Length: 363
Image (cartoon, rainbow, N blue to C red; front, side, top):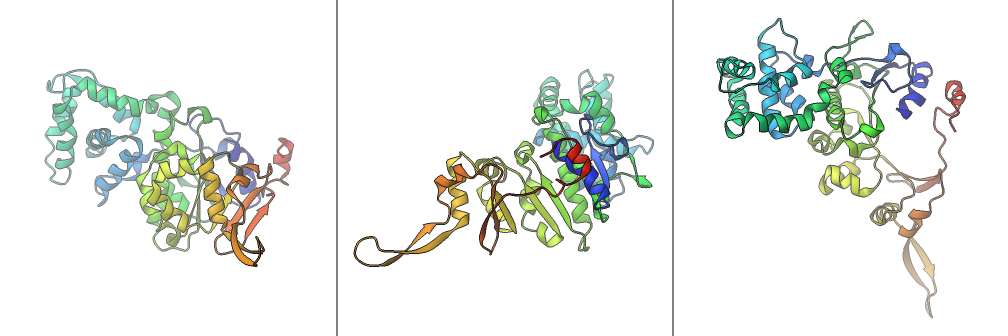
């Protein structure tokens, strides 16, 4: 929440941005009017030509393959009844209904029987694939696997946050708000619970990317920042779209602790594709050997004329040898604008002179 506390009010007052803070746990120090809730299940409907694709993307963000199939299947029944409001907490509760899946009189069995009666050829294959998991595994095993990944959805604050869309500037909040000029959206979870809420972060990131791409070839410019990016884990949507995002006006800004985190999250090839599209890289000191070697390699070589023994010769040496990466001065960083010279700077945050920030004692 630190970045939100320091920058949200500044961006509102000085940049004139509308601010939306998705903060289910209520840890950010922002005015109440900035807080919003978001139900991703309302981002599509049964008549949407991309209904199945959007539903799949929602479940891809929060669970593994088995849960993705079953989640889509149990979601569909809410869209078939126009009087039902689909929410992730309600769907997860359905998955935990007691009883034998093959007994239509049991709680979970009645839901499965209802789904088996669906005849729509567009969605029937999805339902069959999801229900097939109950044939290959026991209901208790399926529930246990799902709860490992979905238990966070049933916590009190998440139930409230994921069950409705807040009012936002005269309409209901959605990530389509990102396609409007001068809007800043923050997604905040407690630092000590990053592992627990990884699914929430992945879901919100995927929804934001979809919204930006939905804008098409507009003149929209979007800064997409993932602080503590490793907490999200490997998100295929970010990896596969990394090369195309700049042409859509999206600047991806990842924050990793070391090069190992980056390559683990994106894969070596995926990271290379992403890094090749970066206009600017910033490096701070690191005690990690691989990271220091990567920084040295990116800074490049500098030709130096010297006389080692008898004859003058031109040799190339690292501008910043790997061992020097460990000793970059505190509060200084290496700033590399691709295609330009390497600069060592002592950055001054853009919000440092803002009165509200200074009163909080920010340095």
